[in-house]
Amino acid sequence: MSTDVSSTTDTTETGGDESVQITERAAKEFRHVLSRKGLPEDTGMRISVKGGGCSGFEYQLDIDSHPADEFDVETVQHGIRVVVDMKSEFYMAGTTIDFNDGLMDRGFTFTNPLASGTCGCGSSFSI
View 1 (cartoon, rainbow, N blue to C red):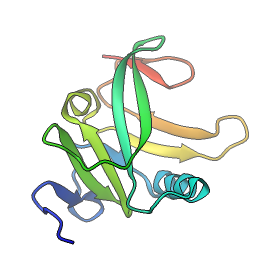
View 2 (view 1 turned 90 degrees about the vertical axis):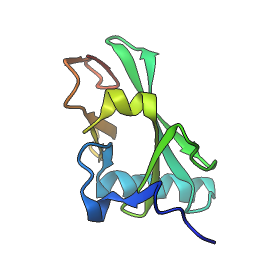
View 3 (view 1 turned 90 degrees about the horizontal axis):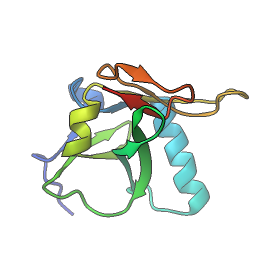
């Protein structure tokens, strides 16, 4: 099986600080979710922005088994296929997604340099 290198890059090796980045902890948790659900390891993490939430825009993480299309930006980070549609990439350029494993704040977190404000729970933002 061949991979189109022009559309898929491993940003853990190339940097890619203008695109959405995931940390090793986020990748580890995503692999754990895939394992629990019995999904293949090549299943991707789809990251998007939707209108809504307390602050105007809301982050969304989904499990993606479909190949990226011409409207997607796809990278491989820490062994995880990460897919972001181009519209969402506009609102999330430079965002880092991490995973907190604490008792009070367990879950994926988003650090978005473009956000001018966020809600208290951190799942929505404004620009």
